[in-house]
Length: 269
Image (cartoon, rainbow, N blue to C red; front, top):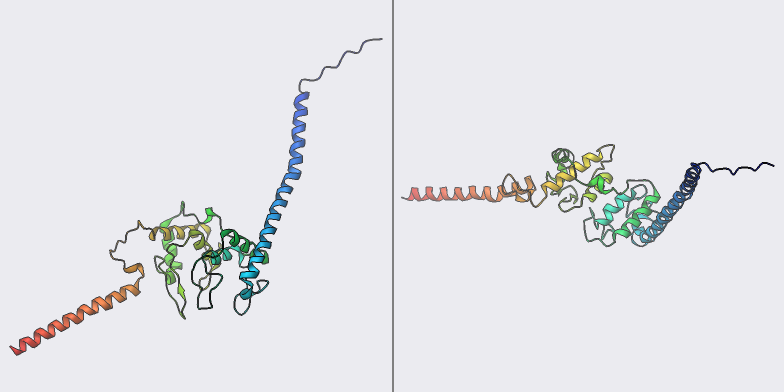
């Protein structure tokens, strides 16, 4: 009986086995890891919504309704999105201290984590603008000159040409934009709070919003100098007209009195 010679293992067999093991391991990870990650994200989102609902029930439901449907004391919040919540609550405008022509900016009473939870709950009631990312509102790489042109065309009628603010009808006003965070300016353009019209991406692109934010940051910077000298608060015709009445008209009255006195003295002599 002939001896069977021992089979020699092919030199590439180990490589094939290793590649097969890696493929199986990668397939298992792809099958299970993303599902676990998605499940964790869903769980965190659900928790945020639940916590936000609790905060809403205590601080908001009395005006906006138990389900955000609105009441005679507050508008519906269904579909306003998390961006509207972040703007209103993170600037202290909400919760409203008392009913009036307009909600003023005041001290913030919620932490950012609580504001995010409120936003998650309101967003769950209906789709709306999301809180923008830093890349969306950062002025880096923006066209300041273009932003000035856009601001003067779309915003200066109410906010003044440098964003100092101005009066509107029936006790309303356009607030100053000095010291307002770029994120909140972006959110205001997205959501159109109170008397302001909204400028969604279909009306004003993300790039144009960045340009406007960059312009406001430049003209309201401490390093910016007024080329016209005394800027009188930068309020435009209001402060300029007041200056003209007080000092201009006052000077004319003084000159008229001086001329009359000189004329009377000349007649006596």
